[in-house]
Image 1 (cartoon, one colour):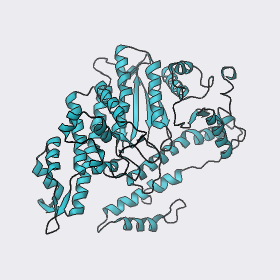
Image 2 (cartoon, rainbow, N blue to C red):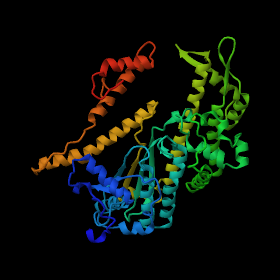
Image 3 (cartoon, rainbow, N blue to C red):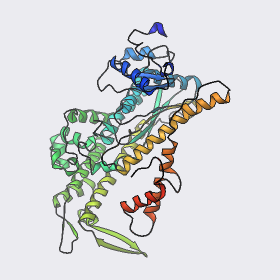
Image 4 (cartoon, rainbow, N blue to C red):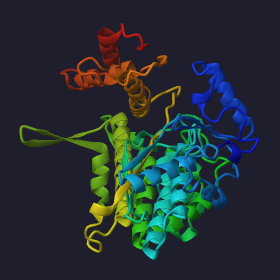
Length: 491
């Protein structure tokens, strides 16, 4: 291994397992810092790769670099994402067993970029045929589309994933990618109607306004200025110098055609995106009885056309609620606060369903045609890529952010189970003399959230279902009453 390494590669230690003071956090950080100063952003911990985001382009992802890691033993060359990708691929080929690469880290750590680099590596290094080229193109091009509809600027990251994504890539017996499938979960729908200061809504809204052709915007009833739309100005940073929405729009439009969207499907998709912006501009006033009335008829006309619904029914649904009691339907008017809530709920639901439809459409274009190749399931293997949203703590944290952070805790728990805990148990079972390594087992955190009857989610369920009025304060009181003595619970 040493012969293949340059003096620069040898800065610090390449594998934290070889660190002399392996229990010292300060020594760990110092080793990372030394390597980072030399633009060495990758370091191993055994078979785990630690990556530090350089926030700049490094010339380490070329075809030449891919060739350097292709088919080479894991420790023969310096640490790199391509080594992980190649190792997983070769295990898949030689052992004929499905593989999975887990990518975790806080928001802005570079998880989404790492996923794209891995897919690019397989696109370049795997066997080629005409059909395989099509699959490769679609696997790569689904990323800009999903990022446009599912990513947004947050305080810590200009391209933060606001949904979880698990991608399966299917390989045939020759090792060529033949299909794929994406599983998405927990899109942060609250971002559609509200953004914290310094944050933006999903990229697609700004891309459409900045890059959309004049004729397209006219058909959608939109203006180029994002400040005209209430759903785009809550964070007070509609335009960001580091994001080129116009260029990104061109990339997304090209990607949609590559993954088999027809012109009419693209038009319908953008009509729904535009309808969300128009919904945000629907305003209400109160009549003499305090009931809400729509005051922006122009928006209702656009919405009726874009969504293909009756304007009168839409107006009615935004200002009234239907209650079914003892088999009878009762329609009662909403006040101003309730009408605004109904409008926002509709916008979130429309966007959420559109995103699910988009993922299903992408999956259809990635699906391997079983009828053309009977028996492919018996000879194919799957490599999974998990790219979840990163851990973040904001000044105001939504329920969705709580779920995102909980998801990260569960992934950390899985990581502990698969590495530290299982490794130490194996040492004990084989009677190997070793010095136990102390680590924080975050199971206590996961239990605080998910434990039956005593966890935060169970208490929330109970509070939502009980008779009487449930509020934030009654929920907080219930938490205080039930888990106030937990060492990791603070209010």
